[in-house]
Image 1 (cartoon, rainbow, N blue to C red):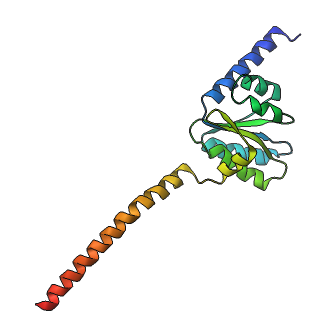
Image 2 (cartoon, rainbow, N blue to C red; image 1 turned 90 degrees about the vertical axis):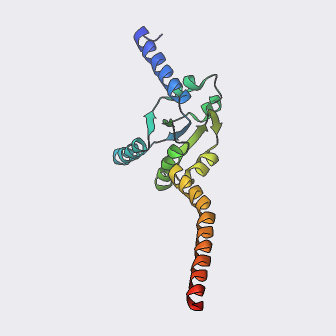
Image 3 (cartoon, helix red, strand yellow; image 1 turned 90 degrees about the horizontal axis):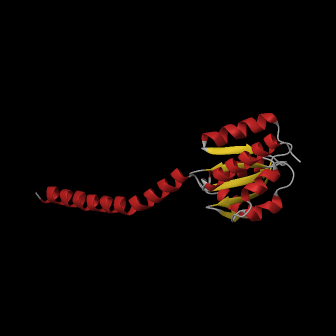
Length: 171
């Protein structure tokens, strides 16, 4: 039987991770075994700059945190070393950064993920990783909206320029 103090600390840890998961829009669970301290430091810095919280966690604590939720399906991949990256705002940041890191490091594996409170497969996490950032997507959409207006403005300007030249030649 565990010490009451230890049990209380574990319950607090489970409650904290449950709250973080509930307040997030996306997350990715990874196996980080064999990752060097230097690589881990670089990864953590990049995740922190993107607003993603990265935590190494015991499998049993994470299993208890997701028990009874729509994320309970992730329990089957919780073996070995486990870390979770949680994003409160950006749906793709964790997947994008961890996917890029996993591609560059053979020992680093993505186990599962979630998006808006629903479990997603490793393939879906990899697809999310390939999406550009939110700012790039917004810029692309804005460019698509501006293109017809810019073309129209150039056409009107060409008509004005042509009519202006024609009047000068006729005089």
